[in-house]
Image (cartoon, rainbow, N blue to C red):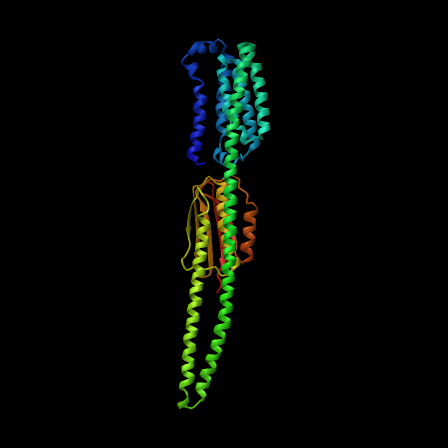
Length: 386
């Protein structure tokens, strides 16, 4: 979920919180006068509880984008404490003054945050206890019947809203897992195609060794024979040597054509992989003449691209990802960065650790950095075979 949408959601929640003061500001049904009759101390306490709710709401909903996108809220314990304090503030507001239970709506703003922090069973228990306490604090003002009706009604609204958020979160997580599986499938397909390409390279090398080696041996013998015979007998071995030369050129052209096809296959393979993530605009830059030195190097590069895409999808609120492959005389540099924002602190997982090991096995190295206020940056160096 993009930052603009998240910011809009937070402001909508704060706007709903502020709108709860409209009946008081416009003195609807004499509510302002009732509040003023509470006395200075209780009025200050009521206003303090109302302001505290807004401040807590703004703090708890920080980094809401990653929370809503991945269903995993950073600093979960602190946010739970914030929700508990918001609940206390709302109950305190209603205990001091809540004409017709209107201030109970603030519980809904807090309850919709719970599915990202607790299991569904815990959410229902929280709402149940909260509803019971709300009934208790409303009885002195509204009476048993009205307090029971208001408590049950607001409890049902809380359950409905929390369930809606719970279902949306599960749907979003299911889509993310499906995207991860799709990415894993495309990567497996890329590995199979790379293995087939390596097998083709081995076949070509064997054919070059068998056919060209044989032809070159015969060509050498013909030339040695032509050098030892009298001038009038040179023509037949030279003609045979010319025929062998044409055959060698034909074999070389066929092998070069096949190698070029293998190069085109690798470029197609990487381009297919970077186009496999829906909802992410990936810019891939690779030299047209680049060809991996070995199957191990090709698999490492493909793994690098996959890990970069996986980390962007899972951990960053990104819309674009840039992948670069730069070929230098002495080394190969591959890098990846996005326009998202990580939830800090960020700790590399098993995927990035394994990628470090892959680069080290090839005599290279990889670094992981967080730049530009939270954007993930991966960069790897590999030696170039001479």
